[in-house]
Amino acid sequence: MNVESKIEPLATESLCPRCLERIPAERRCEGGEVVLVKSCPEHGDFRTPVWRGGPALSGWSRPKAAVHSSVNHPGTQRGCPFDCGICPGHRQQSCTVLLEVTGRCNLACPVCFADAGRENGTDPSPETIAGWYRTALRRSGPHNIVQLSGGEPTVRDDLPAIVRMGRELGFPFIQVNTNGVRLAADREYAGELRRAGLFSVFLQFDGTDDAVYRAVRGRPLLAEKLRAIEHCAAAGLGVVLVPTIVPGVNTGNVGAILRLALELAPAVRGVHFQPAAFFGRHPEPPAATARVTLPDLMGAIEEQTDGLMRVEHFRPPGCEHPLCSFHGNFLRQPDGGLRALTEHTPPCCCGSPEPENRGTGKAVSFVTRQWAAPADGDSIAGMDSFDAFMENHRINTFAVSAMAFQDVWNLDLERVRECCIHVVAPDGRMIPFCLYNLTSAEGKPLYRNKKPSDWL
Amino acid sequence: MSLSEEAAAWNCSACGGALEIVKVGFTYMKGNFEVDLPACRACGLVLVSEDLATGKMADAERILEDK
Image 1 (cartoon, rainbow over the protein chains, first blue to last red):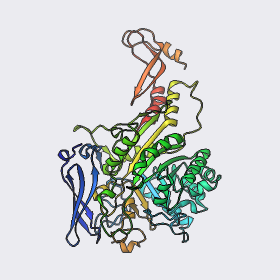
Image 2 (cartoon, rainbow over the protein chains, first blue to last red; image 1 turned 45 degrees about the vertical axis):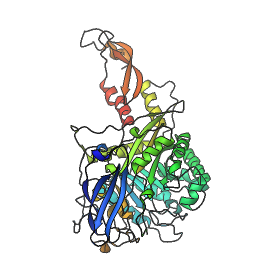
Image 3 (cartoon, each protein chain N blue to C red; image 1 turned 90 degrees about the vertical axis):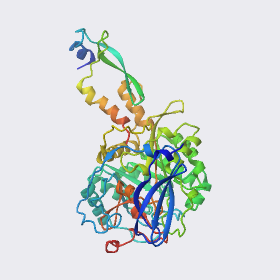
Image 4 (cartoon, rainbow over the protein chains, first blue to last red; image 1 turned 135 degrees about the horizontal axis):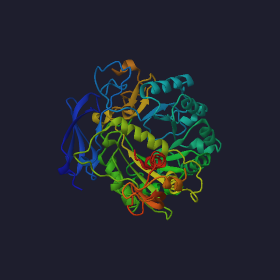
């Protein structure tokens, strides 16, 4: 598809990968690709593909009006992205709040945005975590998804108590982001988490073949993943499979992951793909072929599912920036087929913008409904048609989505300002996920592991 | 109030005829299903009570709502 004629170059800002200074950038259309081009007076030019092929980026959006919510922010000094917290220039409120409850991990993945992997170390105390929950409540309100992350959160024996604490403080939906190792090893553990008030497990699931796990996670893990899913299903926890997509490793496994996920539904509620980003030390610019853009992924899904899911079934987000994600919903049919519930229609000129907090509300509402396990179903037989219709959709809706994280090479500050996934930093500031994990080419972090006094 | 009691309590606003319980087809975001509701066979007008509109119909709409 020719996107070149449909998109104008667009000025934005980024950071220099070498010195982390803010520099002008431009989204430039070149031969069917949109490339982020930027230039540092000291360190030269940088180019990163951000959108490759169709659907055309020019029609890939949903009109939104900005929502500003910066509670108790001390005020901007250097501007985005240096005095985040969230600052008054931010255009979106939180939809998902991440709490990193440990820096420890029981795997040592070559790919880790959180720079985890240490078996020892000090975890934040329950009192500290309670303070983070209260910060999130004060700054974003209770109507957020809380994701407990790390490190690997299940290495903490008190994780069920942390879940319970969040529920008691008023958060309606808590999810754990996990590699599943403990959930697989301990049959009772999923039940403990469910009884504590957990709804959903965001399960790293990079492929249907152990060669993928050896490459991405350092050891074979498929059997453990499947056992973890079985234990979650028995406990009534919804499972979302989360593949990190690495070119040359599992880009050809996308269709197989989706087919396996459909076989494991309704316990598996959907698949959320995350193309790998370059956090940590990467002295040289990643090759263009090392990037999986959202259209690359949509195309791979269509091709590898033999058209069961098609590019036009996927929609841009109503919450975060359009360059950051896509999603589509499908209804599983009794004959094993799928019926798409979503499709993308490029907006017409007369559409009125949705306030961005409406998009946030819809995203939270959808996720809380879809990513939790369906309630134990009554038999549809004998229900009235409305009830049967709803029960069928509750059980059989399958969600496919992807989120393109930004690293220092493809960072686009317009995207950052619309981010709705915020990490509560140790001092209580709320930082957009990508900024929190962002590092320079030499591995120097912008925010992570830095004291607030070092930030400005 | 049962459906038949509800049907008996209303008349068609277009023709004044009595309402009967008929199968009414619903289509929303590519989903189709049929529900028994009071309707006028002659005019095709259907009675959607406030309870239904704000109850199960709203629930069905929400369950299909995308993010």
